[in-house]
Length: 241
Image 1 (cartoon, rainbow, N blue to C red):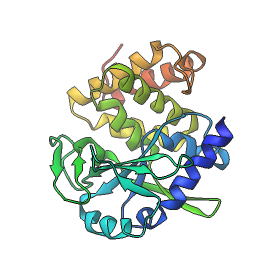
Image 2 (cartoon, rainbow, N blue to C red; image 1 turned 90 degrees about the vertical axis):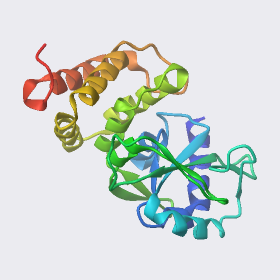
Image 3 (cartoon, rainbow, N blue to C red; image 1 turned 60 degrees about the vertical axis):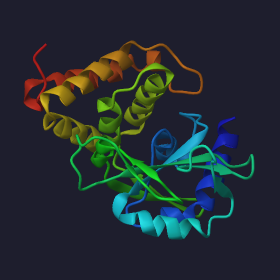
């Protein structure tokens, strides 16, 4: 199953290469932990879509690049979602981000007949980290710390909220020491309300039950607790225990 999913994921990203080559475009969301595994093994998260972050400044470039993408078409119900013409590919969800914007700005719609985008303020946490090359596909990824923060401050509930927290777990499992240092530093600079959201969501993650096709939180409670304890330290902007 993981090998089959990896193949579908890479075929999808290969088909999107013209888009991925545009300035500032990033693969974001649940696929990032998969791609950060050794050889992009894609064993951590099984997802039915791929999120592509499109900077507002690159919107026109992405639209032009989409003209050469033949394996997908816009969904009739939601034109920011592009559905595959083949079952061998995965659905694409385009979302807008404004790296120069205020992280706490309200979400807004970038209206467009071809590619409308919902632009989320918290996606301003994301910065380009590295571009992987896997089986000839160039894949731009965000820095893990920024993606973790985006997941941890965004208010979500239900199954979607649970899956997003388990994506954070996947990122923690693939993160290096420098990523965790960056997370702690960035969290210390947040407002009191956002910092509390980070701590609250990490607490929820530390208590979660397993979900199908996601990292098992019961196996990694100690790691989550260590991160939570570190972010709660006063020197990192947290509150004393």
